[in-house]
Length: 497
Image 1 (tube, rainbow, N blue to C red):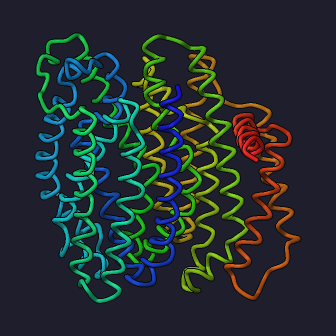
Image 2: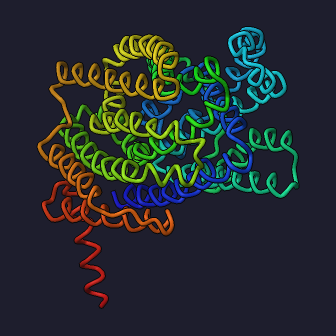
């Protein structure tokens, strides 16, 4: 467990650093130095390729972690498990690339705005580049996570890739590269992250390209194939639920509105960063616990991690809510129209964190097929509500529609888990944490605005709220894991002094 904790702490540090770099990139430099239209297009490129990746990976992302415990044996190169997945994914990329080329015409018809058509027509080939590189990146991330080595993959995705993006933004700003070169390099930057993970896997002696074709003859192959088949469509449904807004806004409006939406959706996504970071540690543990049918460990891990990530999410949400005007001051008045996007999406993300890792639980359980029905229903609802709400309320409507569907899918999954396994993550401490967050929002109303400079106002306002929230959480042990860690640090400092 010590190694797992070190990996978790290291991943958390890298995610925090990546968060800071990402904030500088997406909220300050990219919109100002490159433009909200290009920001909207590049994010559209990444999200659309993310949908195609689900086909090119044959839904194997979750399968890599779930079935790895059955093949894990370093002396035997894990039965060629990684090599098998690598070949499968390479074939999938080739097939999906052909599909992407065939889809060019319909995509251009869907994005009929003149500005949108120009970017798509000019840089359409980068969709395949982003698809291939991100697909391999996810392969190494999941493989190393299954080996309880998520720290380095987190560095390359959350820190290194964003530092590369930062370098490209500055190169463009100082006139060292053209806009065309910037967009091309922005897509190809993932190649460096993939190369870094290849080198790391080789360094730890876990780079095994020998394919275990004998997997076809094992009793697990049918399970892997069945699980991956359902996973493809379930994950597509999940992607549609959480990302279709970024794809639909340029179709119904244009990429400039998409750029504004992306900026505020980044703030809301920060709420789930603790949840996402911890999932890289929790995933292999849950997969192994399901294998052993250790329901005591599953329930305990489910409730504790839900409380921890929800507590962190409430603090981040409060920080966003109290600094909306300061965010506009950073971005410029043209971005004020989208400031409540962060609030609506933030509510949806809080609903996601309070339900814990319910998605992982159902995916690793024998009932994983039901996840497809949930995701299909909410995906359909997401598309319909986004179309109606974007037409009526613009980008704020997209945020409302997305938040509603995130809440609904969590309700469906949670009800299913409770019915079949009598599991839920909820506790009175969650209500108390929510109350602490609400109290912080009330106290914020009595903090006078510092007109001298918005940076000073952010520091004072955020510091006051953070101290108050932390004091409530630690003092009343609303989140025991945080309280224990705090007092452990205090004890270490006390001994040294």
